[in-house]
Amino acid sequence: MKFLKKSMFIFYSGILLIFLNVCKSGRETKMKYDIYTLKNANGLEAKITNYGGILMSLMVPDRNGQFADIVLGYDTVEEYVKNNPYFGVIVGRYANRIAKGKFTLDGEEYILAKNNGENHLHGGIKGFGAVKWNAEKIEGPNGKSLKLTYLSKDGEEGYPGNLSVAVVYTLTDDNELKIDYSATTDKTTIVNLTNHSYFNLAGQGEGDILGHILMINADRFTPINRNFIPTGELRPVRGTPFDFTKPTAIGARINQKNEQLIFGNGYDHNWVLNKKDAELSLAARVYEPRTGRVMEVYTTEPGIQFYTGNFLDGSIKGKGGKVYKFRYGFCLETQHFPDSPNKPDFPSVVLKPGEKYTQTTIYKFLIK
Image (tube, rainbow, N blue to C red):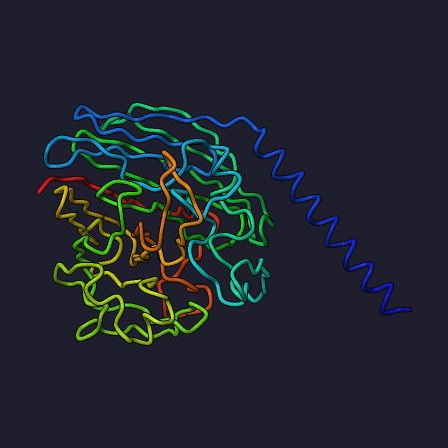
């Protein structure tokens, strides 16, 4: 009898949870969000929404002057609200994974949501990519910008401290999409912000990205275990499929029988960038031979996550009804390393009151 009562309690609790989630999703879908457009003197155009700070589209020319949208996503904000595998979002408070959804700071243990198996991923159940940001267009020295601000309250998703965040998107006349991040806190916390755009330089939905030629300015990467958590090792890339120090096709070695590629189902790893401290320097360069489009990535961050769309499976219809199949997009997420709060030898992600977190990443577009 006790077992029956317990089973019924679990059943009805599950029904209630589903009902509450449906109601919550409905409220978010009905909430009003805005889309902002940035254009430069050369015709490049970026569309950004204040829902999640999402980069919805990015129009870039090819060698023949033909423009195409090179980021995966949806036509409407409502579609992002309903189902978004992080297309174009601002990720926070902590980009990437935290092992077992917990960390210790100043002797106190903080428990986070386990929303990726046993891990905490991209800020939790409702990270920065699923909240409404305040937005304003501003004129800056480098061009027109969109400034987004958000207050992440103490205890949100389990993180300590009231965190005031600002993200500024700027589309310059040098064909750069510049993203400046900043944050302050009133209590010691952890911060690791990034943008999670999926790129395809041939155009969104125009086939897989295996023929793109990639260079990553890194001699080492952080190998992972089966749960995608770094082991703590900084492993040399030389002699491995992870060596992109010279321009190499993304698909050249992606199917090799390599333990790390098996764990990630392809590339889904953090590279340790060759750089001095927080200087703004070249992290990666990607070239798409058919169109001649080139994208260079510059960042002040110590690492970059290279992900090859290994979880895209053809179940998502994106912009213009195009289906996103396996490896139809890649991500280059500038960041601090995954699970840094539990890896004292990794660069620190701790932010204290009176300090200011800053990060700058630039996606620069060229023609070859």
